[in-house]
Length: 189
Image 1: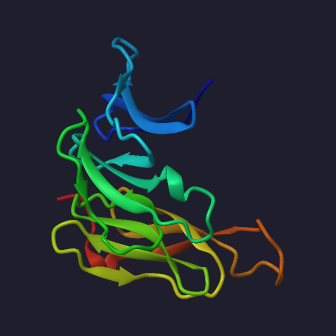
Image 2: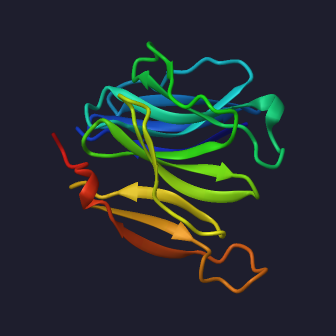
């Protein structure tokens, strides 16, 4: 059985990128957006589960998260963020801490991305990270869930989901928030 999910399109509109699960193994796949070419697998990592992928503004580099299949299901599951060329070459590890680094979303400047870290106490918070320097800046401060960041095409705003206004003890009630990121100058270069 095949399961396809987490579909995105390259900024230049040329490629469709998605995660495909076959027999429990998740890898990244791509195909021409106009449907003219074959589906092509770009990751081949036995025991790793790749997904949540987005193209950087260059439409050549893919940002994604991955976890070890052996860690699957544990609370606070370790996840790592990587980049890879969209042809499957040049895989590079971006985050190095042993915790959960999840839901990366690229900024239009091609250098930064927003992502979710799980802090002690099982606290989901959003950070901004530079691909060049590794500098991280915490963006959200709540003892409730903050996640699923997405940065506007001009780099000035970020939307995210949060349970900060949900009744205490409730699960799955998320509201959408908008944050001003203009101080970070994340716009297209």
